[in-house]
Image (cartoon, rainbow, N blue to C red; front, side):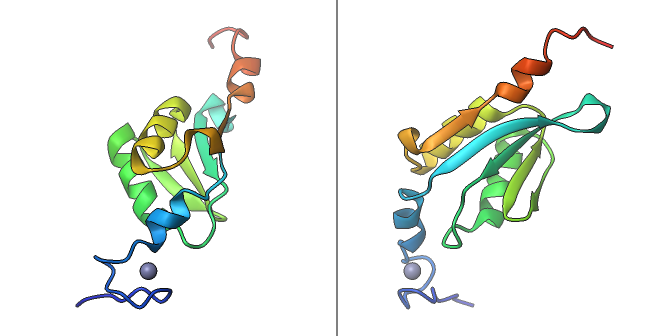
Length: 114
Ligand SMILES: [Zn+2]
């Protein structure tokens, strides 16, 4: 069953719409602390040309962590901000367009381990 891209009409295997779109994405990667002090990594800024279901699958496998999609944002369990950035650059995302915000991680650090 060959899926056809709704944008260019080519079969998905030949379609490069996503590769082109990838270079336009202004991505923000941030970390946040959830209940019980668990860190999560949030990746956001995708437009609808990006298949984030595929992306989250890749990121989960390569960071060996759990993850989900929430309101168009990717949430990964644990602090993987730098790793995710490297992985995404490897996929064709533009380094200058990826903003990594680790302020939440650093601000809370140093409060001691409970
Ligand atoms: Zn296409």
